[in-house]
Length: 388
Image 1 (cartoon, rainbow, N blue to C red):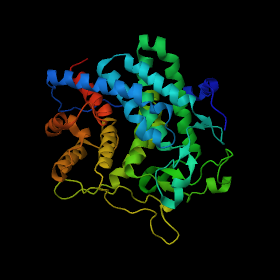
Image 2: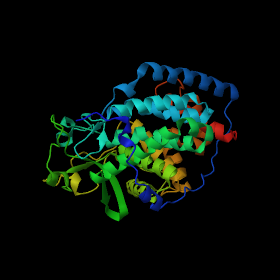
Image 3: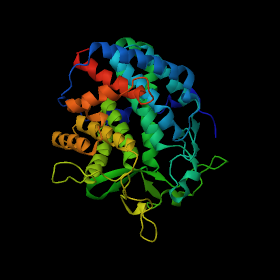
Image 4: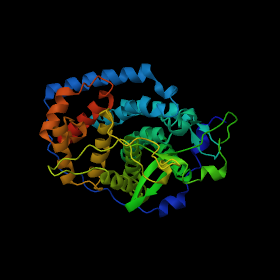
């Protein structure tokens, strides 16, 4: 495989197609119950968080080494931190760090057998189902997670004249690449339609061999049964990437793909008589591709003991709600009640419940790994509350 050169992306945009693309506006954000954070605590959070992420940006440097699914979990918390950090403070040093990390990832990308680029690695899908962990390839999840903040911050750069003058060309190239990567996964069959108008992201059954060729022929690569559905947490991350692309480009195709996933997710969430949701399965079969020849599912359908996966689900649900898709205020109220009942104080619900807001402020550590993105996100909300 040949190393990617920076000019590779220059000719990727078809201007006419972009001009003709159908667009849909994002709805107004729903009302919140947020109250102002204690000023001294807010300053303390910002100081501790900035010291933490500055150290990660300087010493951690996963942007220089992560490949495959490792990009998702190694790079994304820092990249999210740069985006939310800028949104909370408008300090351009976080934009500079974002460019540094994004460029480091892009310059390591390689051209793959179908002409698209990626950052392939071992075990790209993070699952042992049908030996998928033995493949070498790139990860849809990783590209979704790391390019979500990249897309959103690119949009901010292009809206601010001073930033656009300095970083506009970078932002344009990043958006071009993000759309190109989405097209890659569409062409590779990365989404499957489900019953009742739903859709889910999936992983394929082939990778790249030592000679830089696919490990399966064209017929196998197009086989509708050779795939495996993402668990809910990963499907939510992919859908949030689609929402970011919709935010910045306005293109309906991204909104539609996300909306269909959230429709499927909501159908998996049983509402109980007491107004709370029964905690839903971590993974659930979505179509014939998720079954073995003997009729059994390829993965168990059960509630995962790791509560963190459901934190990701709630982040996706709240993102959908704030975009006016599928989930309503009533659903948010049901989830607030669910979290209290199940002792799962989902931080994504903090803007919509004083109890959750208090819990977040009392428990989130701004200089922890979880605080890299969580703290500046909350500080961004506080900044918006103050009208900054």
